Length: 586
Image (cartoon, rainbow, N blue to C red; front, side, top):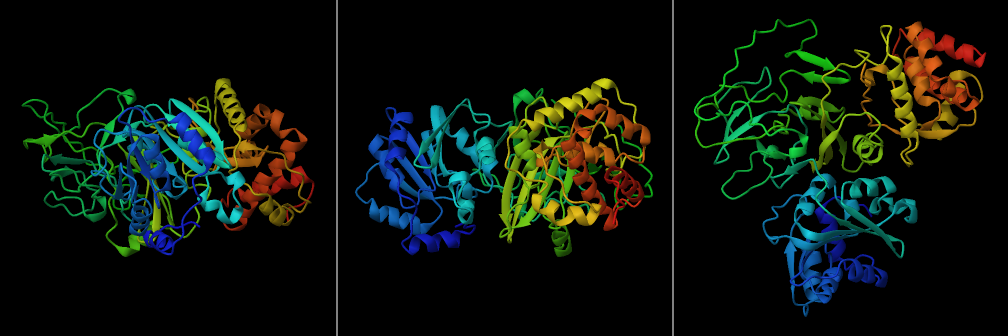
């Protein structure tokens, strides 16, 4: 049962169905680990028919029990009509204004058999965490993947999802309740930025990131537009970027307040400081280049950053001189704007969109609601939560998920790297590299640290090896030794001379020699660098397991070249594969 629409839940409860009853062990854990203080308040999210909410009243809490299904709340009111001290509230915790909730917060927030169905988990977790009183607890009760049949996997969390959920809390207790994991989380809300507005964006896609300045009434006074967009009077953001209503404020934009740990507090450029507006000299107009298609594009590593995207409002622009202006602190606000043309919406759904957003990098991906997320859907988020900090990678600041018109969208705001990648224009290395010994040592240490992380994420599948290995290389497929790795290691994902490893979307279980085999194969056009790779990683490539697993990397690239990719690299791959296997490539 993996419902995605409210109507499905309404039907579920109206037909008299429910969920697993609250067990005796669950009751014991709540009584022991979350006893009610004097005047204690609790919030039960996704209360269903109200069994847990009624038990929390018995523990001494005054309870707000919320659900977005009217049929569930109707049954709860009927089945627990004699229970005093509970408010039954119709509320979608992901989309509705949380104004009906208690303003002074809660000592206990529970989510029982709910978390697997939450789409925008990062934003919901922050919002709930901010409503916890000092010393309060957020308790998540969930089935686990290892104890759930495959056909019901959608109702459970795997270990990586649990690790993401529990990362950043001051204290985490994990207990077992007859096969259910009970997670008791305490401490400050684990977030680098705090969401002020309530609702998530519901746009089809990100087409550009805009810097927005508003007055006290919430009207948009200034925004930076993409080159080629028709100029006009300042207007509220259209439809889907209206994210929530506060008192007297239209649903116009999503503003974020920076975590003070992320850097000094700064005013948004373009806002008056005192009575004087700072002005920047007008930049010279850049002459369009041969690769321009409507606007200049800058490349930084694997990030292709349109120079007009997510720029802050210009100093001295139309906003300067207005009164009653709200300062949007740095980092500049990134706003999701819907494509206006149906062809653009369809195009977005076939690819990943990425844009620079000030000193951040914004990435948005989409999938149909009825399609399971692939390995790259939340790879960056899981890498940020699970990999050791010693692995140099861009920092992930924030993420959000939402749905609209049959599609689910996932957005990530991460660190923007101003230094370029070591390979430009794609993964195939186009020049010899002269990197210091310390860079190679750092890469070895980073890959070794990654290999220690247990994961169920599978990037290279044994089924693929069984099906294609012999066809592509002409030899029987060898036994594979598995480890955890990046799975897309090439110099377009590496920076230097200071090492940073980018693009962790597809990390997971790979053959032991796969990463280095890829790095070496993509460097075959530069024999000096290729030889250096083999010297630096002889402890991997010159072992039986590493050599066999290098064959898997070669087989994958041979499949790419057979489909027309990397034509300059194709003959080098074939020669190297024939050399290693002593068999001509079929």
